[in-house]
Image (cartoon, rainbow, N blue to C red):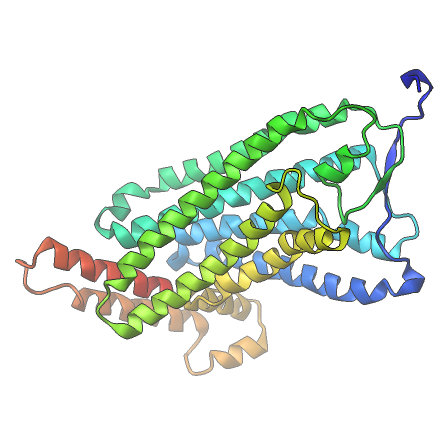
Length: 366
């Protein structure tokens, strides 16, 4: 057919969402609750890090950035999913579809880079504790955070611009939960083999992040195995296991979705994988990365106490108030750390580094 006689597509239709009369409410309620938990949980983590001076260090700054990204990462797709579950018109405009793809993947790439930076930060803190303060300076942390965002948003821009120039002449049904490269490109009325170049670039970036994170945690585990205390070793392994769980959940689903090349999955499995990295991974991130951390929980309690939540005030009733309780703990922790400094100034540098490594791991587990 001549291209001039083709009718160009101006909107896409999500054909795999059930109608409201056929029980879509059963999917709407849990998805809505999950989205609310992700938003509230990540906002609490972000504000806790910004307002509590104890958390002003590289590790928690990266956690707050990651939480901020998670808020927008889920907001790009989940509200539209919720709308499609209750609306009769399950459509999205061509421009809206391009924007959803761009921001979803740009935020996802930025998150992957931030996870990589977090793994490097923990590697330096545990494996090179004596040099940590001189390496992870505030300036370097700002540069790493800004660089991750700039690279993440620039990397996807050429691909989205190229897709916007493609002709779409029908059909317009997207067999996925949100706009994604493969289902959208399958609707184009022209050859899209050029996308393989971008696929190779994506594969290289994903595999690079996976390799860096894997090597960092392998080195951390080796250091943990040298800890003489069995209890400290067990706590450190528990912390690493939680971090590795999120790493496998995020990068495992991304690998299955975007590194399979010519391999095809059943439609139901495709949607399950999409839900895994678009919904489930953001759901577990606040719990595993932050809410299991004692310092983070204390900071969140401090915020809730300042907002007048009586339930949280009851949990702080053993102290004069939340603020004074946290201040006392800081003084106690400072005193304990001072007492942990070896009295013998002739101690070997290797023994001193082992003590600092153990203190770093105890700080992570606190």
